[in-house]
Length: 197
Image 1 (spheres, rainbow, N blue to C red):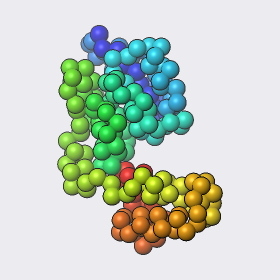
Image 2 (image 1 turned 180 degrees about the vertical axis):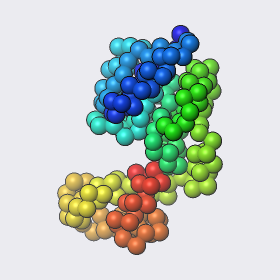
Image 3 (image 1 turned 90 degrees about the horizontal axis):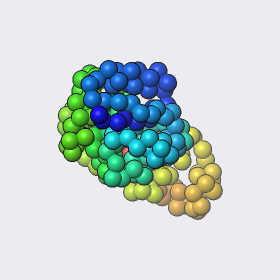
């Protein structure tokens, strides 16, 4: 029996996945979690064989959780099939990456294959990731863009990240150039759409 834990902040999606997986022979859903920051304790308590993680959850993102669960079999199941997310997930050591619009048979096959030691990646997303390539943003540029996403001022970003305003402007300028954007709002949109943030 393959023991599965599902972490997704949308109750309907989480419940639907649990119901569908529970119908499969040899798969048992042992826990459901609605927040990223609750996953580690649920893993310790329920000891699943495979952890299914959404990317965007309150408390902690699925990518952050995946990094903390290195050594566990983790499959990202997300609506956001962005190439940058795939790259970051693989860097975090995940065993699989499946988009939510995949057929149920594909998800159950992914769970079984991951349990067998394989790495499973949505083929269309893999091609897209190879085409787009890795993020050109440095860690600090990405951090500055993430902070800028709310439309805050340069002074606010500087205070939040403990940088000078001039340094923030330099990081923003570099990020704008690397994303091919005209301004920081567009740079944030481009970087988010590619999964670089």
